[in-house]
Image (cartoon, rainbow, N blue to C red; front, side):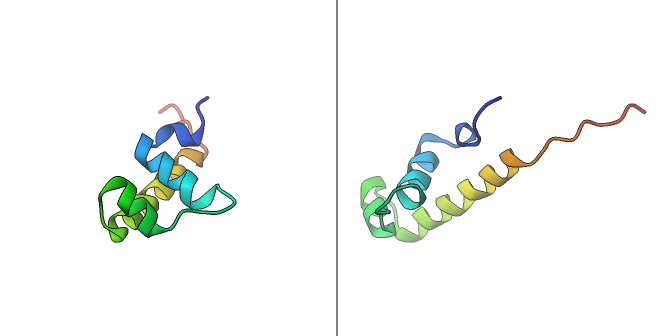
Length: 66
C-alpha cells in the first residue's frame, strides 16, 4: 500500500510539507517566489493537494457481485 503523500506531485508534496509539516512553516509569499507563481496559485495547489490526500485516505469499497 502506498502512502497518501505518494499520490501527490512533487510540487504538491513540497508545498504541503513546507506549509503544514514543518515547525516553522513557509509563507505563501516564500513558496510563490520559489516556484515563480502567485501566492494565490500556491494556495490553490495546497487546496488541491489536501483534496487528493483526503481522497487517498478514504477506505476503498469493493463492489458487490451482481
